Image (tube, rainbow, N blue to C red; front, side, top):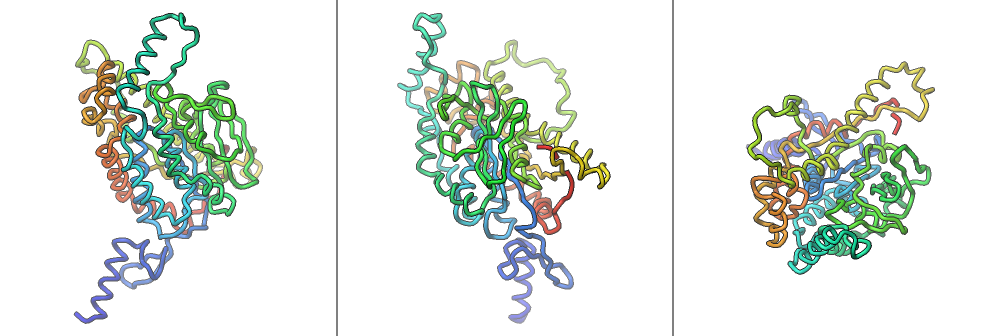
Length: 434
């Protein structure tokens, strides 16, 4: 085979394997047969909002998804106009929002950060501290108020996580990216313990207006580390965080509409990365076989409660978005312009795990620090039980690595959907109230 033939074969192979990385024509794909180049990606075509949900250590899955997207999309700047996060998803969101390089570099570095994590870098695991917290709980619960007001309201000291993020999150660059227009808006949501409402702290373009709904509000402010820590502070497990004099906790507790902030910031399409496997209808039917145990372990109850807080709201909000999109799409074009609240159709691509992330954490129990493992055993969290609970706390390299790889594989398996979602001509016209 001549040099020209070998080069042609090599070019076609490269274009087939990674069309977005064809160096001579970024954002183009060569059609088989006639070899014609067609554009499939136009970065300025439409405002795509990125929504990252919560879930403790499960949020590592999102970093794997983003790594795959960095391979699918042409190399360049951030492909999202707005970035919104809640709970641990807020940690991923603020890292992306503050990144000054290209998207591929950001995703590569985000993956490295997750692999650097360990329980010791998220919460204090030394026996003295854990036993001290446990003894204070026992004193307050058994003394019946004898020692006046309780001074303990958490199980794990998250000081190491704050230190870890302080060293690695250049929040000043987030402000620079917003000021330069690299991203239109950024938002992170926390739960106010004083108002019992979800408070979305946002910063962005001047035309983005604060909002007030029944159980959620949007407040413009300069994003600081306290906002990020508050959003990821799981109640009871991690301490509340004081922000501007008020106490806040994990945003997933009261955020019933996690898609809303991105819509308020003008997103025309939504990319949503969840951390729960899609379940078929028959999986939701009541189980008729007898339980294996006479007593349900507290760890299993806690896992179910955490799933309700972190995993259910995004699914419900996506269903609501799809329903409203269908209803609005049926409106005559003449009626859409007169609809109140700037209603519009907002297509969404939802990327979910193909496997249960809780089940993947089942063998992580033995890797927990000894004292913490002892405490978890007391509530029935062991290798064969309480895997959902363990999955929120398993900041272990082995478990994190599994989620990173699964997120990558799941997204590459849906490559054609990602390309279609970001492809030229993806602009959708229509109307949705945030």
